[in-house]
Length: 336
Ligand SMILES: O=C(O)CCC(=O)C(=O)O
Image (cartoon, rainbow, N blue to C red; front, side):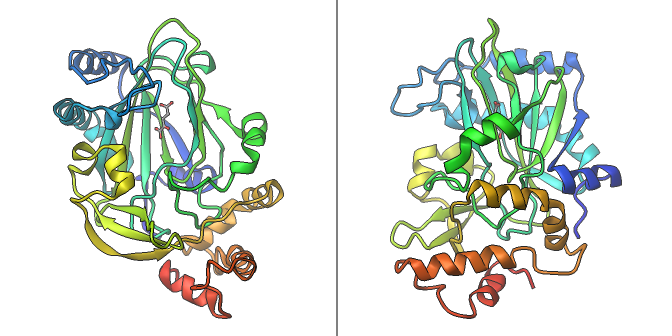
């Protein structure tokens, strides 16, 4: 397995739970970063209306802002503040993009999601550093995560399809999503496939956090674009350092013109029942150990058998409905 963290105990915890908690920057550094970024002038003034054509979120997010100069400068400041953190905890990862999240009082609910997978193969690990710059508790809308929910199936998260947990989000909310109570500067480093979200800020102060997306240094970052002419496949687009600055969410969802074609990957996303989810969650560590080559066996063989059943029920997905489906898909995912 390619080592992700510098420390072995972090690596072990990450495979099991999908995240580690660590002191990332000091409270003073957190406040300095807030002051610097708050002196910039984003298009939404850190307080989006939530009903503009450009941005329907009720929290400020750098990527969603209309002012590219602001996006560039905010990214520079976050790189500057977090590069040492990346090098301290992670084994040869690099920052792809960074976002500043501001939740004004009474707003900012963040639906349950997985972050986009931004590396070409499912076994590649891409990460998020999430670091609050103020103390966070459930009341001000801290991050909530489902421990161990990463890579239990080979899905590619996309904004264009309902997620695999769509039918049981209420169960995730009630039973599985756990809020992270953290001091300013303490952070969480998590697998982009980890299910997470956050509630609105019910305090009277802004809730402010930084999010940083990372890939292993040797891997070119990509974007998975669900092909509108054939939703059974994703087009893999190579991205560059300006991808999330030059593009808006809308140009990315439509297909950004400045990303070059890399290839295709079959879309094996499908909904899970709550029973399947719970069963897979339980044996998640075993699945991931197989995925990373730490144990013998095919991590997703049964997922794909289920997919095969689904395929035979669904005429539209003809491309993968043959007896060798698993071998074929294993090839696509490069699991051999
Ligand atoms: O800041 C939040 O509440 C959500 C952040 C998030 O979803 C992320 O960092 O991926």
